[in-house]
Amino acid sequence: MSSVDGSGSTLDLMDFTTIRDGGIIETPTSYAMIVRVEPTDWLVLSTDRRESIYRSFLSYLRSLSFPTQILTMSTAYNPEPYLEGVAVDDELVTGSDNEDDSDVVPDESPLLDYGRKYHAEWVREVIDVADIRDREFFVAVAVPKGEDRSEESPLKSLLSKVQGESETAEKDEDAYIEEVKARASHVASKLPQVQVETTLIDTRPAVLEILYEVYNNEKPAFGFTQSNFTRPSGVAEAAAFTRRHRW
Image (cartoon, rainbow, N blue to C red; front, side, top):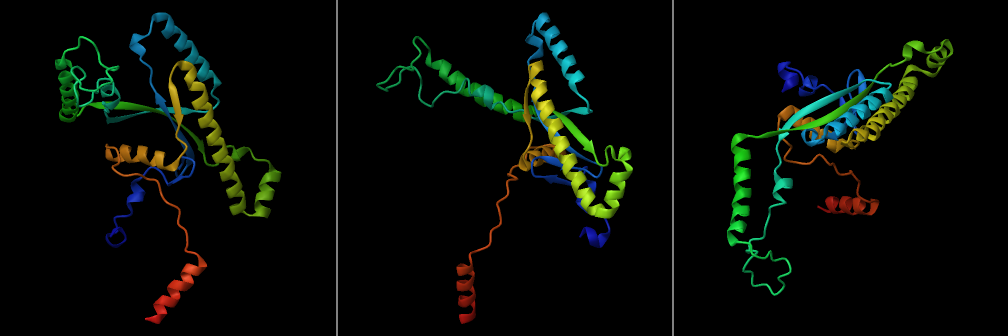
């Protein structure tokens, strides 16, 4: 349809060219990777603890020799980790007929069990009706295509002409990909010193899930994991060929 009405492809509206294995995001001008950051509870920290984190963050910034970008994304709030702490079985804790009463809480009213159950239902309903949102944090690193090419020596320039531009471009691409992996790993290993947890997004499905939510403002209802395509064995193909030609 897009080729017929001249409106162009949907991919033309995307900010990236492709997502490679290993979580590499290729754009028209660079190769990039992202690191997920789990924030810390800043408001409950003491003054001394905050000063310590300030100094650690300053040390982290001084360790960087390349630019980074901190990104935030609004996402649906997931109350399940909180509700797991108040979840109970359908049977009442007090007054259970089970022979093993090791898990029974003494002197606890059955009303508390009903309260836990309806509290969980109330929380889910409020979050759904009020559309309560949460935020996720990421750090993005990138390596521009053609970085440092302006400083290449005359000998390297001559070799690129002799070997061919395509071969040189392929070698440069491998170097850029290795560099962006190294930068992302550096961020993921150094940021925990400021009391946050990091996760290197190094798989293609994980990157696609994040990008899907960025463009659609909701989490995907399906997975992006793809199966490997395999051909049938030669015996199976021969049997199928024989069967078709019998008819």
